[in-house]
Length: 218
Image (cartoon, rainbow, N blue to C red; front, top):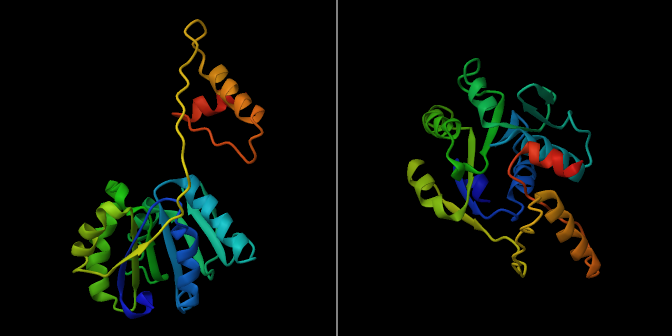
């Protein structure tokens, strides 16, 4: 209802609240995606691709048709599709050839709190564009810490809080072996110990870069 009643809405929600995958679908239910596509920007290419895959799966449609994505050096989308995920840099580049962004009737700027140069440029651009295109809906999603700033930027746009799921978290510190200070061996030991304790489910390992990920995978 807030999306239908207001041109600009700020959505506050932590990571894991489901806003990235559910918001485009809510926009479809609100009647958007008809006169133009629903654009959803992501700060990173891998997120744009994976979110497009997820939403197309949830809507039971083929990726690249009703739901697609466009990132640098890779794209899979249709000009008459409903939802298009892209990096914020791609949307910014589109303003060069389509200054009114007429290809879209709704633009979602996801993870706006990351405040990259591209995101900040888009914020300024969309503020001016919404004054000229009253039919364009704009949704800004952010972590809860920055929502008031975004609301004020868009002339006190309404803020909607979306609660995420909370799970119990325990922290265990495992320093590497002083004699054999090898990160991959440390990861292997930790994973082995978790599964030895009858752990059920998947394990997510965060590493500092692509090279470290590939080395750990090998």
